[in-house]
Image (cartoon, rainbow, N blue to C red):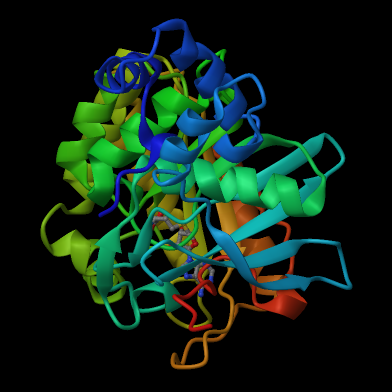
Length: 345
Ligand code: SAH
């Protein structure tokens, strides 16, 4: 991979200035401007020769295609990266602000049966600067200012742990984009070793767990990762995470007609969550986000109907679990959960 200035922390940029025989204070000037979306060529407070040298290491994703939802204004970008690979990002406008859904890998190797992002497997991990770059490029194109981030696009963020952690430190830097960790959610299919590691990082982000089934047989059929870490292990890892960080965890549950959406399965889910999460920590708030499965061309699954969804949610609520149905944005442009894929330009 080419070196990317957007991946560097301030101390690393200071090191780069030393290599280039530049004064150290330049690093701060450059860092602040980079993360405001200014290209080195336009950094008028730098000597011309330095701007040229820096341009060689500046790689912003380019907008290869852009679709705007006629329904809700959601914008889906196809970005092409410096090596020609493409990923998608989605800009969503809510009443309280703008949130961006970022991709963390080109493709995905987790193999979930209902998800478009994994078709074709994983090509490579994204670098921290390519995550920052998705935000800067989307802001520059849309004129909107991003206030929240969900790591819920293409890829499994915890399968690209080091780059994602570096990204989280960069994006929260007060001299950088300065996005508060409480406005950042990371979603994982359940890599338990990495969840345990994340608990040690002292980052008050929100963790989302893609659960999607109340028992191991159903979950393993939908999500191969469950064969490595079953539901009991996953829930005890979540309980430890909560004990350590005090941060609430939310669960995502994709409702697929006839597969995981019966009232009996809702009972089982509630029982499992209450037993697995609350035994030592009675007060842990549990929140389940229900997502009617979105159609993916290659897959056979269809979404549960409104009545089944309501009934499922009612069972959870009755058992003390908060259940909400995720509002669907960008459905007319295939920008909803699980519909993002590695596009070709
Ligand atoms: N790899 C991470 C990040 C992806 S987030 C994870 O698995 O959590 C995307 C969310 O959408 C996940 O909860 C995923 O399971 C869900 N999803 C995938 N395909 C979907 C589909 N076709 N319809 C609805 N949700 C889907």
